[in-house]
Length: 72
Image (cartoon, rainbow, N blue to C red; front, side, top):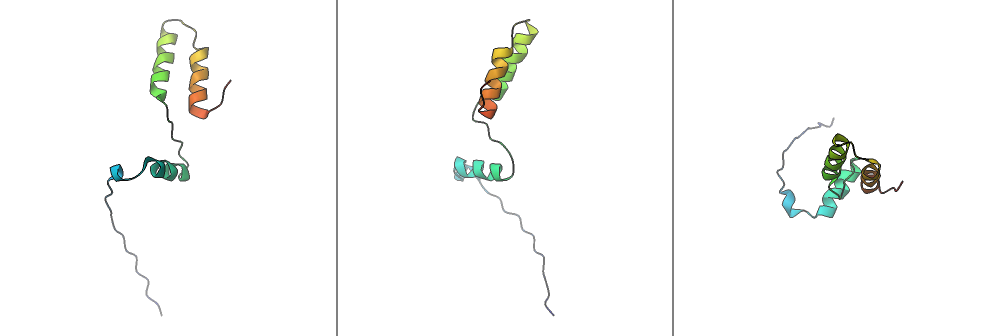
């Protein structure tokens, strides 16, 4: 009869030592999407335009393009 053991361990890793591409690949394997643009700044621009009664369509199209890589 075999005895099975369950062992848990914790490892601390300095992420600064890893290549960004390896980190992005790991995130994508987990189903997460990595954006290479400052989406928060675009959303801030949309908010300010809307608050000032300005047209937001161009900014929304820019957000979609830079987030999804699709142009409307």
